Image (cartoon, rainbow over all chains, first blue to last red; front, side, top):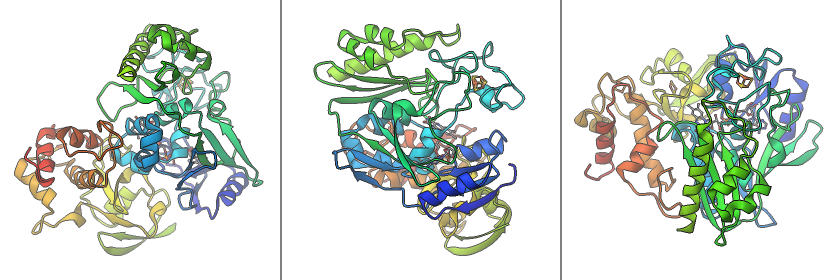
Length: 316
Length: 169
Ligand SMILES: Cc1cc2nc3c(=O)[nH]c(=O)nc-3n(C[C@H](O)[C@H](O)[C@H](O)COP(=O)(O)OP(=O)(O)OC[C@H]3O[C@@H](n4cnc5c(N)ncnc54)[C@H](O)[C@@H]3O)c2cc1C
Ligand code: SF4
Ligand code: FES
Ligand code: FES
């Protein structure tokens, strides 16, 4: 690990101020992704701002009947919250499908949204990677692509976003709340939060430098059948090859977001009209324009079958 | 250098350390508590599992400075050779190990697993999210998936945990 200085922020606004003041500063929450990458010198912050004791660890009802989840709420606590289990089952299920008990005890809401890709070439500092080192090229293109994106990728990067939680939040239309260095706050819809790689795969979200996530809010409950189905190479403690987050109503209408297929949680609202006509029609519309490699084309079939299984379960 | 006070296994310990020091390295290198093991150092094996403020975490993926003032329990604090914790005794009885390298982490995670089920925290295999989770072998296996055993002692580990949980395996 490269040397860094460390401070504990006194308030959310103070944290955002400190981050804009110090070049190379980063927030640290659970640390489970950032420290992993710092040990490999993929992340090399000069200054760490600890945001763990800012009181951002509460889950509260919103006036609209939704839920406001503090940025520092641990994944375990969010999945165990009675309101989340009852009204936002897709989110509880997605959280519980991720990582391990030890990691969920530490991982936070904000940190989970901002975790970085698991592209094997991003982790291998001997390889070119536009995300790790802008302009250096992409070793994954033409390399081992089994785990990588099948849709929304670019000539610069074909990585996927690894979070399970974010896929459920995309299906639920969550909103990310932030504070900037000047104290100004804003609300970013989750659909606009994560970016496609384009020419700048190192720019992964809509956040500005030093902008601190304070909370994620969920709209009022949708009702319906909630499911998160994750397919992976081992039964637990592994990232998704493909995952499906779905909320399906009695009349067969619903919402679907996919994990493991793109640089961000993948949802195509216009395709959801096809849901009552079955998984084949719906998935063809959701993955319209997919450009898989010969190694990851299986994800298209897998996504369709996973959705078929979720829809069958929803019909009961 | 940073100053950090930890309450380790019930004792206040003051440390002077580089902020880069992980909790695992602080325990092993500075406090000579070498029960917690370094398997992967990247959150992928569970050998470094300890309890912080009563919750199990991987001590390799956290900085000691982030835990100033907090209580840490390691395998050394759970029991002693002449007064084993029931989970330690059950691992011995059921042969829940071969080489023993993963065992301190397994035992810390096992104790926490039973507490988490007791506290009603659901898991990936809990069928009904709105009901209290059941103490089944399936639940134990899923909740222990964050601890890898290279020797493959898994079935004996499940038996040990099941016995402590008060159910026949
Ligand atoms: C072995 C292993 C297996 C895993 N398996 C899965 C899995 O199956 N599914 C899954 O979804 N995840 C998985 N994970 C990833 C895990 O979920 C993430 O590491 C975790 O969610 C990150 O949260 P954190 O709080 O520890 O983030 P940190 O490491 O503290 O931070 C991550 C990033 O977010 C930034 N940040 C943190 N808080 C804020 C804030 N409030 N505002 C702005 N920026 C902030 C940090 O600066 C950093 O860049 C796995 C991890 C490991 C090590
Ligand atoms: S796919 Fe993206 S993350 Fe992977 S090597 Fe290419 S640029 Fe890097
Ligand atoms: S050493 Fe910490 S998880 Fe492997
Ligand atoms: S007993 Fe050898 S690794 Fe588990």
